[in-house]
Image (cartoon, rainbow, N blue to C red; front, side, top):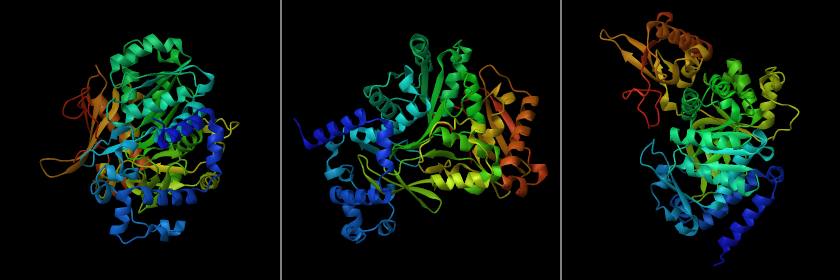
Length: 501
């Protein structure tokens, strides 16, 4: 039965499949992002019962929101004042859950898991983020490619969302095969051995620590990653540039800006932005110049830095946290994600780099003969409650991880750790770092001392509070090494937490 929705899906599919990435992105760059988000507000106020009720309860009349300045004064929406107040169907267009055809579940890390319905229309918008990575970075239009989805499958957003977007790219005509072993290493290795030799390149998609586990375990199992021209797509965690380089070396990569990319995404809003070759090159410069990073980001830790399409996801900043508006199965208007971060315009970023005499980004792996898309940047830190405080200094896991991700340490450590403040029997406090050993590696005093000195050196380099607040005699952390998949600190099969209180 042909319906209006069916016709809209057909039109959008036709535009996505037959429109080139350049054409689609150029159309968006020519649009007025503020006018587009204002239009989204009015469409949502008309068609979504829950949002109409949300406005009415605050005595707000949608018709009076006539300018972007007025839009910016609208109240923020979040899970507690909106998602948990209104029924699921009421949050969908026309109050009809059947307008959506698939559902994802948030992780529930901040409370009860939340259902997020969406439709193929929402996925086509997000598929452009994958197309940017696969075409601009990995040149998939020129090379037959095996995409191996290593995210967990099921209702959780990562696996099936990624698979579906990759299928859309294959339908568009890219020479792409999608395999879905999920997060089962033995299945991943079987796919690699049987299928990867048939393709010019292989893309691994998954959470950063798990992809590293796959690479390391594959090497131990005799897989020669360098034979398969491996690329990697990450999501879900901030990682250091040292980590990117180290994992890159293990797969035989020598092009860090083009052989991997990270997505910034949530179950709530889909993919919000993606790393690009230029954003990676800028981040690598900032990793080398902590003072510039502190000036730009306002903190002594390096966030994820991506570019975003403001027509797809419109960002604002509220008290140093991110607010996003975007169309979805559940349309979001000024939705408070609460991720700590900020936005930087494209020209503003270029001016900042000039002020810091960053020099040619070719020095950091960018091919500057290839045009880059002049999209704005958004940066996001890990959640603020993952820090620990020691002598008044905020110690971030992102700082500590650089200490672990040195080549001489990664020969025997996985990179996972737990950061905590431990009190001794006589009441003294010290900074504790419990690190996970690689399978078969053993602990000894020399390894503990090497790791402690490396973490201290990186904290002094990257964290000005650590250097200035903490007495010199307290700056060396106490390191404990635990076996691989230690059940108390590093249990298998669950999302790792890098801090403990």
